[in-house]
Length: 461
Image 1 (cartoon, helix red, strand yellow):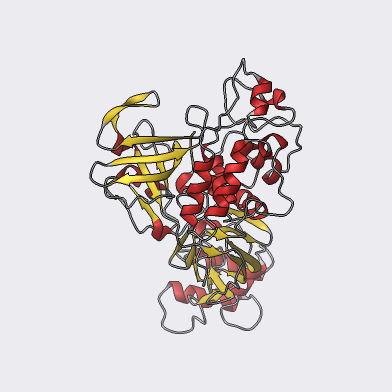
Image 2: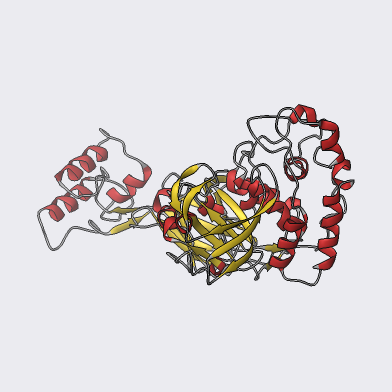
């Protein structure tokens, strides 16, 4: 599958983001969570329950790996000519599965059922999610291990995409989990992605794929054709031999099933039908997520809650917060500025920078700005002002004889200008625009040292 926006945000169950959440560690992460009847009657449900019980006191990565390994052998029956009765006995389909059979794509699994039913709120009898499911499987494993709940996943999903794009973008499911960047390692193949999405802080860049500290339960991403153009697939590390460079991993949607495989990073070979390439060149990123943030939101504070921004500024604004996460979205007066990828925004060591281009479309005056992080929100007042020069009646940024002429015409009623421009035309400060102001401007243009009033001084509207 194509994880098209990985750096954007798996990089978000994986890769790119900054903070994983933790919830209740149980097979049923919420009381109202329901598995399909077929799945509950299958050996995979029994193995899942046992795996969670056996690892209840283990680390986050150990629990995720145990969940994944418990599903070994689960097949996706989205192919033609399937023995539906046998598939049901295997616990691999659910009610109405015949409607979801598709020989060209995958997705008819208990894992995509979870995504459809509990994240997207789709009815049980609707068409299945028509998508590749490697990321959904990894996300499901994280969910089962207790790192989130469906409401939080849903909030993440919509904050990153603003619309339900799950049909062909299964990467959204893994993007719902945000990991600390200090635990993310990027290989040279991913460098161009980081250059493109430079809104976050990266700690481990251009790491040799052979030297990445792979650990059981960690997540890694590959580009099957070794081009680095896409994050094609996500898998869960089982083991890594530092001497032989053989990586053992388990994953979903590998030949339509959950299966454990090995990859020798030193070997050059064709893989998944892609061109000949060295396996180490296929590696894009790895994430270690032992450190996770608590689920509850904390109070987000900013160094200032009142910001004045002048349109004449060469840059935008900077706001320092105590958030340990990435910025999810910014809105002004309820108008969405875009997500943390599409917008001209950068989050670096707790300081949010919003580019000038994001602010120029708003009118002068006070605005309500809300910054949404994955661990809370903070509200600030934004006052947009504009600097003018006294005497610049025509607003071209320069004070010339044209301004003197315009002020004279305004004073006798032959021209009208805006209220702000009227105030900048009153350079002698007597509260009205008259020929006296014209004279002051003329003297300023002629380089007089006196009698120019406030001509040339700043005026802030």
